[in-house]
Length: 135
Image 1 (cartoon, one colour):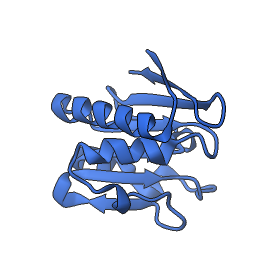
Image 2 (image 1 turned 90 degrees about the vertical axis):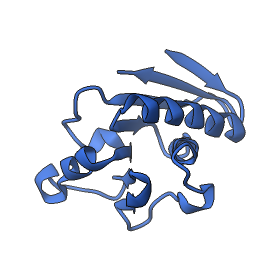
Image 3 (image 1 turned 180 degrees about the horizontal axis):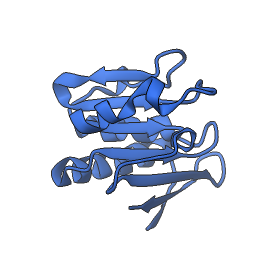
Image 4 (image 1 turned 30 degrees about the vertical axis):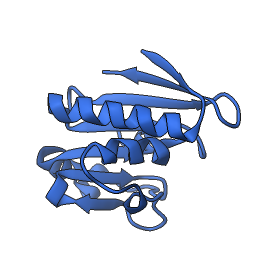
């Protein structure tokens, strides 16, 4: 499925709709793909809001790889800064089994659980994004 958003507000709203869906369906992993500035963190803020997490609490990570909102059953994983780190070193599967994980820069890991939602966000112009959803 492909959806266009035309503002940051639209992208957050789509994230919230997707967040409500994955929460209801028990989907454990949302893998986000897209270049720098595509809107991965904005989309994550929308998803997180469906879990009761405040927008201000979701940030693009500088040095924190995993932001843990365990009381909400939600993990924000940002792999941007990772270089040459194996999955065994990070043990992401622990998070995948514990709650819902949203992974920015998901192309940096090889294996995702079955039934993961893959979201590709493409810049069309300054405000417009093309968001592709795939299971």
